[in-house]
Image 1: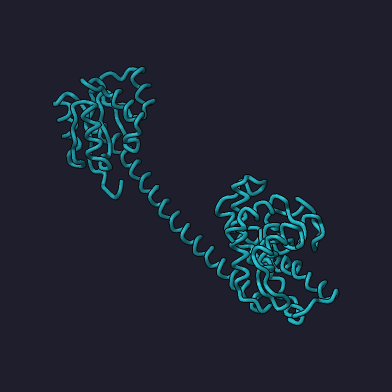
Image 2: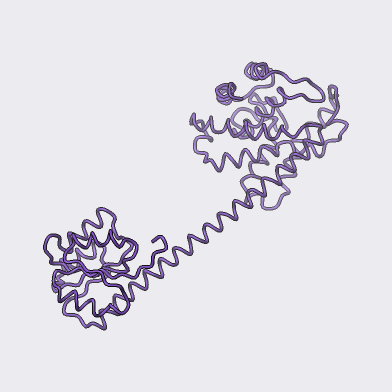
Length: 353
């Protein structure tokens, strides 16, 4: 409607006297628009689009009769939100069936009693107005809810990012690591979706965003690792390494203790990613030694993204490798075994990293 008030009543009849009678009944409530046949009525519908509250339609008319007009309106999806009343002297079973089949709301036989005619038509028009107002209200409420959901999602992402950054800073990193993981995870998910791979085939953009957001939490378990191990510049001892490996389980435990984890997809993905981003395709990873498809593709993607960013970044215990060298090391299995399809997707986008 575009905010235009529906205050017009379209009367379609080839007999001027009939139009005058109907006009006299409704002229106090509506602005009357008249047409002598279906063709003229269609022109009136276009001219007064969004303003017609109801159509009073005769059946027998020259050029285009009532049924011809109804057929045209249905075929071209015109005026389907406007109640139509057939007012005819021939309320035969055939005409009634055809009228209702074509979408009229009531069939009123001539001669009619003005008072009852007015009540029947007005009750349907009021119902349509209420229905339209309810629709507008529902749409408005849906917009408000959508805005609130977006606000909550943005707040949740900010909290997740802040928590992850706190862990990054504690381990002496710049805070760019989680952003790199987020970006690379998203790109790999899209690449695998485009290739139609397995669980990635049906991912929506919203789900990809949720998984990428969850990827930022992959190392939150490091909050439980002592600084002496977390920031040790040299190689870890076997005992220290075993303690460092506990961060994947600690992170999963933290996620598991969060309220309403099952009601928020981000945290469900985060639990899996925290626990399994150090698993490897050949089962040589930790903590559960998952092999092949036993590990979700989401955790495998984050695992590869984590390895790549670690290789190209300078850390307290290593210098940064070039991008080309890092890609080569991953492709040749020097950093552990990864899913073959994932490696292929990674190599497809490596030149754009």
